[in-house]
Length: 81
Image (tube, rainbow, N blue to C red; front, top):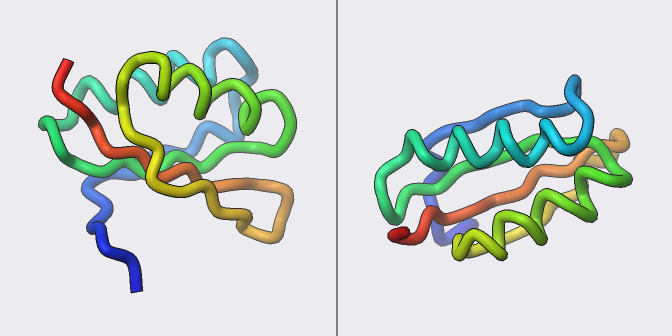
């Protein structure tokens, strides 16, 4: 079992880079420090770019899970800015 509780989820499978990161960033900004966001995204550019960009913003990547359907779920903990 996971050692975290998801506080919010967003699905960015219908948008393309760089909007994918922008949507994830906005969702993180709406959370309180320490809360967890699940980001569902497509394989390819989003999986390569979104985790890297979120990490560069200083947030903690907890997990990247394959959903076995060509999408991934990124689990992120918001870190105080």
